[in-house]
Structures are given as structure tokens and as C-alpha cells.
Length: 125
Image 1: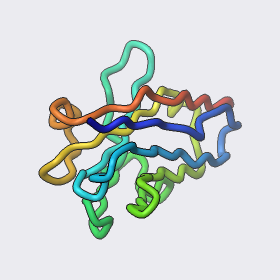
Image 2 (image 1 turned 90 degrees about the vertical axis):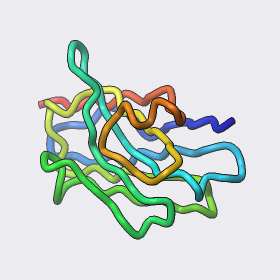
Image 3 (image 1 turned 45 degrees about the horizontal axis):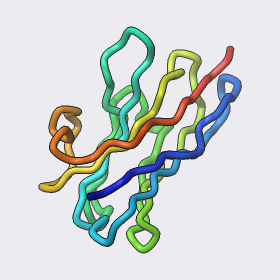
Image 4 (image 1 turned 120 degrees about the horizontal axis):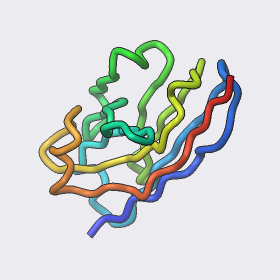
């Protein structure tokens, strides 16, 4: 069993930055591909970024490329999402997710894995 706990959310003005963290329990963190997703009220859960087990491969949604960066520290059982130049439309609950078999940009492929409880990010104009 793996538990994922996100932190680092909060309120920021447009153009500001936040760094989200997701820390996992257990000793098998390095065997999981990790993803970040977000969901605004009334919207579907949206892919943001994903990273391979060793951190050597990353994938970012087109809408966040150049502004957001996913990374991981397997020694700390933690995956990060650095978010710069935030926009009001990026206000959402941000979730991290873990899956075996590599990373994915599809939320349903994490359903047999683990999800965190989410952290709120609010961007004001």
C-alpha cells in the first residue's frame, strides 16, 4: 500500500510561482511512474505532467510546457511540480498519482495505482 500526500498549494497572483510536492510512504517509490493532474470545478481531470521511475524521462502537457517542470527525488520518496507564470485559469485541485509499468498521461491508467488527496491552487488575476 502506498499513500501519497501533496503539499505546497496555496493562493498566488497571476504570474507567480508555486512548488508542489508529493511524498509517498513505503519503500517502493522508485518503481512507480508518477503523474500530476488537476481538476477545476465542473471540469474533467486534466493531465499536467508525468515522470519515469528514474526521472530520466518527463512529459508535460502542451499548455504548461516551458512554465511547469516535474522532477523527482527517489531518495526522499518525493515528486515535485514547479509551476511558474501561473494563470488564473490554472486554478484547480492538483493531484499526484502513482502507477507501476511506467508513467502515463492518461488519468485512468493510474486507477489501479494510487492517488493523493489533492492540494488547492488558486491563481488570482
